[in-house]
Structure formats: C-alpha cells, structure tokens
Length: 460
Image 1 (cartoon, rainbow, N blue to C red):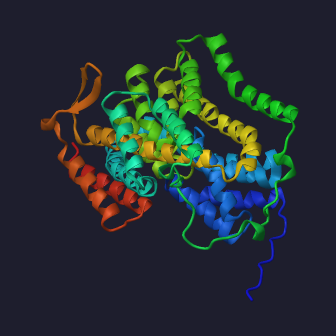
Image 2: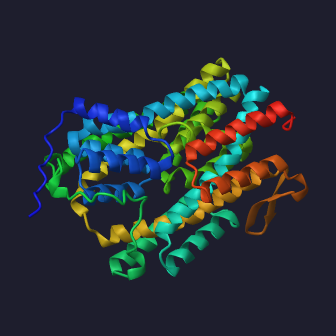
Image 3: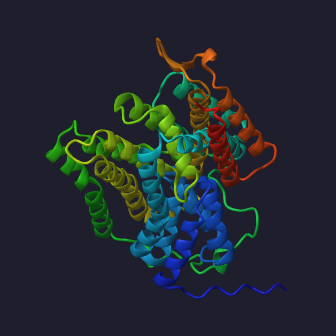
C-alpha cells in the first residue's frame, strides 16, 4: 500500500517571510504565471495548502475587484498566520514591483525623450500587444467551454467596444447571471474558472500543513469583523477624505485618490480588463498622459515583478508630475505614485480580511462557481477590447473618435500605419503563438530591436 505522506511541520511567520519574498521575486509574467509560481511552491513544494483549498481561495479572489494573485497571496498568508501573515504575504507581493516602477518612472520622465530610451519603449509597446492577445487565448481556452459562455464573451466585447458600456457594469451583470444560473444548477454555468493551478502533482488538503480543518481565526465574531473592517476602511479612506477637504476636488492629488479608490472597488477581471477604461479616463478626462504612454507603462509592468495593475502607479506618477502645483515635479510625481499605489492595494487587504472567514465556510458553493464562470467569460471579451485598443494605438499614428448614436469607437486612419510597429508587433505575435517564446524573453528581444531601430535611424 502507498505510504500516507507526513504532514509538514508548522512554520513561523519569520520562516514564511523568506518564502513569500522568494515568490515576490519570481512574480513575473502576469497573474497566470504568478499563480502558477505560488501553486508550485506552496502546494507542490512546501505542501502548506492543498489543491482544493488553493483553488477555492483562488475562486474567491477571482470574484474580487483588484489583482487576484496578490489577493491570493494575502488569503493564504492569512490562513497560515492570521492578519500579520496576510500583511506580510500581500505586502511583499507588491513591494518589488512598486520599487521597480518608481525607478522606471523617474527614468522615463528624465530620459524618455532620449532616442535610446524611446527606442526601448517602442519595442516594448509593440510586444505588449502579443502578450495581451496571449491572455485572451489563455483565459478563453479555459473559460469558453460552451456556446453560452462564448455568447456572453462576444456580448461583453460588443458592449464595451462599440457601445462604451463601463466594464464594471458588464462584469457585475455577468456575476449576477452566473450566480443565478449556478444556483439553479444549469450545467452551462458549472465550467470552472480562474487561471488554474498546475497540471502536475495533486496534493490532498489532508496531507498539508493547513489540513482540512477550519482555522480558529476563520470564525470571527461580529465585533471582530467590524473592527477589522473599520481599521482597513480608515487606512484606505482617511487619506482620500483628507485630500478632498484640504486640497479641493480639482487638485490632482484629490483626483488620483478618488479615481483610483473608485477603480479599487470596480476593477473586476484583473489588470487587462481594467486598463482600457483607465486609459480612457486618464487620457481623455484628466489629461494625465497620452495613449502611447499608457502602453509604455504597461510594458514596464510586464517586465517587472508584481501585479500588472502596478501600471496604475505609473499613471499616478505622470498625472502628478505634469500637474505639480507648488511642488517640484519629481516630488509631486513620487507622491502621486505612492498615493495611487496606496489606494489601489489597501482595499485588497480589506476584501480578504473581511470576506475570507466567510468564504472558508462556503467551499463547494454552486452559486459561487457559476458567478466565477460567467465573470471569466465576460473578462475574455473585455480583454479582447483592450487588445483591439492597443493594436489601434500602437500600429496607427492617427486615430479619430467616432460618435454616432450609441456607437462610441476609435477609428484608425489607414494611411497613417506605422510600418515598423506593424512588423514588430506581427513578429512578436508569431514568436509567442508559433514558437512559444517566453514573455520575458520576447519583451527583451523586442526592446533590443527597438534600440537597434533607433541606432539605424529608422525611428527618426
């Protein structure tokens, strides 16, 4: 008879710190890659948590606004070492990316118009299109398992691309449809979701450090839950209220605080799903940056560790840098970046510490599974919208907004096509889909190509 595996010995928070730091340093490649790294280390290697419990936590995080990989780390850290463990795991997941984007933001505003740097970002911008298309295919292959899901994805694309329906309404509507369908037991709504874990070893919950038991801190009293909510709400919203009262509604720091706080509540579906909407607001309403700069920021986030939503820090940096008021531009930009990061990620801890105790007691819910399945399908359509938006603003030099009744689209001028951008984007797409080149390697090669084009004079 096969021998039953011995459950791992308990680990201290100090020991867990170094494991979470290792995961943070390896968290490249977007949420799918980050979740795969966590699965390999936490489930297969360390056996801190089992397959079923890992996927249940992931399903909850997929339903939340914000970066699901960072929230999953926070959830598992909380399971192991209560609130302190969640703060360590979730905080370390953000820290390397925040530091990297801050440094790159400084370089961007100081040297971004230098031809060498401009060539690097030109290459990154073209390659990002391939990365986003890969996300469409990857998530679609897992989510669109039947015609109902395909139809919902197509509907989501039409609503957001042609009619300009805000993506939060699309995803919330999808969640409601999935919840009702899942609760009714309709087979089409029970297709699973999320980015998944690994196709390798299946580790039973009973053979792991956490086991199958419900931790004592997963059954809080109402008073404990209210205190937890109050602490994180104050940490999140007190700075926002202070900006509104002290600086007024028209100040750039108030706008950053309120806009990204709103995004923290409605950013369902991950970074790819939200970026087109953020770009539209930041470019057209607030005039913080240009479309090509949004692409440059996404390229930064793709090539640094941490959540892709960290690109919002870059947006906050440029917004404050260009509207510094009485501050020095670099100081204003740094403060704007820190503010954007704070109001983006503090709510993530609120969702986990307040909701996870209840979700732990809901493992196996059909309604939850149905909501997740339909949200994942709608997200495919939303991400496809981002891919089309990126293609238009990457490959064409001139784009004209078209407004005709309910139709609300950006139309490229075909004569303004950028031949080098088209060629490099096409090569990146072939490299990813035909030759299975890794994202980091492909982005590096595209950046090098952009620099070479600069030295050859092709980008002049």
